[in-house]
Length: 371
Image 1: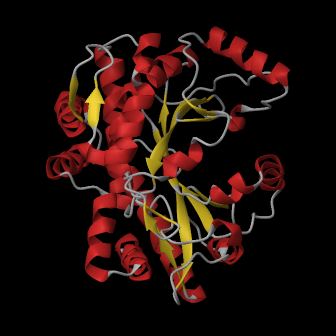
Image 2: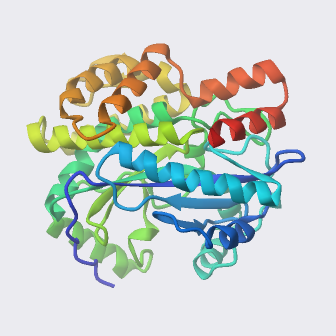
Image 3: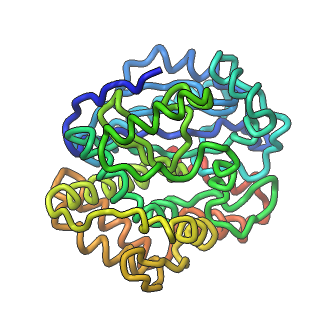
């Protein structure tokens, strides 16, 4: 199978996908209501789409093509409001967060769709353990070579995205001591991690052709990389975000991606090199484990500094490039989070410390999503 041509898209356009939890309102465990939600949502006229995910207690929403974080927020708001209304009819709740805090993976049901069945046959129990919830952000690139340059520049900021979106501290009823435990589940898959270092589409195509000849890969969907090109959309897709507890945070994270991409395109601030990846896995681990309290190793200078300091320096750098509607508000919201050291993982832990009950924490997270 050959790699499809890189399609045209408007540079800096945005698309956002959110994987969401469906929980019952009895004990706030995951509930297999995806089919019922899809049936009710199909009657609504909404932007974007609503589709099933790997297991039947998950649902994925996505925006259409947006030009700004304000438009992302507007579309997500419409979809969120419809989701909440449909969930109320079914007596269930829709919740954000990167993991459900106490669900048992062996109780999950694979959604009845050919691709999900194939993945379940290939990956066994890992498929059910993939009942985790992420936000994906697509950003439009003017051409294929620009997309690869954007991808490898963006890789330096993966720890920012992880720490600012982290919302998965609890797994199987336990505090994992990670802010983002979700990404540990992703790392279990053989084609996860980082994309190969290629700055020309011809070189990337050669790599893809080699992989398909092995029979391991059939399409770009088989790569679970932190960032991957999406040639059919003309975008790169950033996949490390935990699903936030609110759509406002989801839109702000998309705004940050757009501002970074604008800075890259307008200022050409640095040329990525293979050695950037010497500290990639370490930085990624630090952000997953410690969130905004992580240490960041600058891949160019080798300097060690607090991650939140690096985030604040970067936000100041990109702010002048945050010119689309809602972009300034996105930067302001994320700056406040970095200054306070407060992300959704911290919110969940503080809620649990008050309530001492994971079900009540999940209920309150559902209330946070619907506002």
